[in-house]
Amino acid sequence: MKYNENDSMWIRSQDKKELAKCTAFSIKRNIGGKKKSAIMGTISNGFWGRTEIILGLYDTKEVAKNELTRLQKELVTNADIYEMN
Image 1 (cartoon, helix red, strand yellow):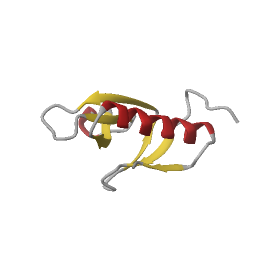
Image 2 (image 1 turned 180 degrees about the vertical axis):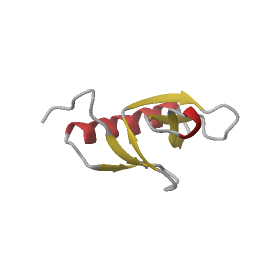
Image 3 (image 1 turned 90 degrees about the horizontal axis):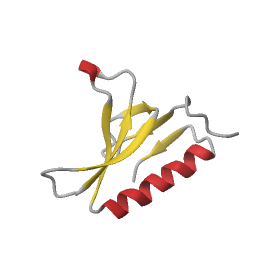
Image 4 (image 1 turned 135 degrees about the vertical axis):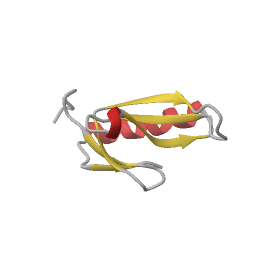
């Protein structure tokens, strides 16, 4: 089955505190933190208009890209829930 852009995926955050149904993913700079990059997930039902959540924090952009690649592979294979590393 091919991933459809209207699909979503349940993701458990790196800190294990959130389980969110995400429709899109991106890497952003983590300003002011020891970890320099963050993988963000877009959600449609956030509190107070929140549409993005931090799914995981990473030492470098390259490490974040590798994790995003792993997430993409899981999307293609239609995993039900993905746990961030």
